[in-house]
Amino acid sequence: MKQRYLLILFVCLLVFPSLLEAGDTVNKRFVYYIYWSGIKAGEAVLDYSSTPDGITIRTHATSAPVVSLFYPVDDIAESTLYPDGYPKKFTLKVRKGLYKRDKVTYFERKTDGKPQKIIYHNSLDNKTLEFFLDRQAYDPLSAFYEMTKWDLKIGQSAFIDIFDSKKLFNTEVQVLKKERVTVPAGEFNTIVVRPIIKSEGIFRKTGDITIWATDDDRKLPVLLKSRAIIGHFSAELVEGQ
Image (cartoon, rainbow, N blue to C red):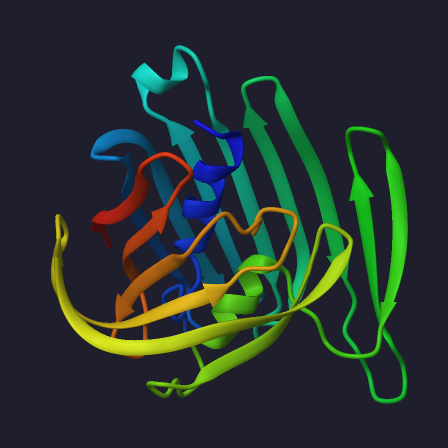
């Protein structure tokens, strides 16, 4: 299994995370099983916490025991947001076999007449870089949390600026159709979307990715499908609060 595939599937489960109301104290947890050509390859856990001080979105992807024997995966991504949804800090820790990534990105708010300052720190080589952007950017998790608030129209695309892997990407999400689907967690009316992935980091494009998200204010992802060089991948919602 290519090292990038499981992380792509896992992170893309967050394209439309459940909407948390600012000012409330909320904790939510969702579990997904990830399959490769019908074989269970791993598990993804998605945690939300919201307090009056802000929001935290955390994802944790691990490989199944059989897969771990030859290719262990243990990936964590976490985004800390202000109460209004703008990002403060994005942390990524990737462990796939011998491959490792460990980075932190800090976001300052963009104010009128001034660029947005972003500080990128690679913990493995202890290098820090600063970037100044002329428009508000989001990390991969906070970006799609922001999109849950948008009014998505069938046949149209939504766009948002994502800063990832030291680059800024204007990411397109195509809104395809509505469809009713059944997964282990139940039967859902969904809106079907397809992100056009350009990032070279955790959003590395490897093929078409299609996501079924609940057709309501939450836009919770319940099903994901993607093609691979060999076979195909899918991720299904198993349980959630």
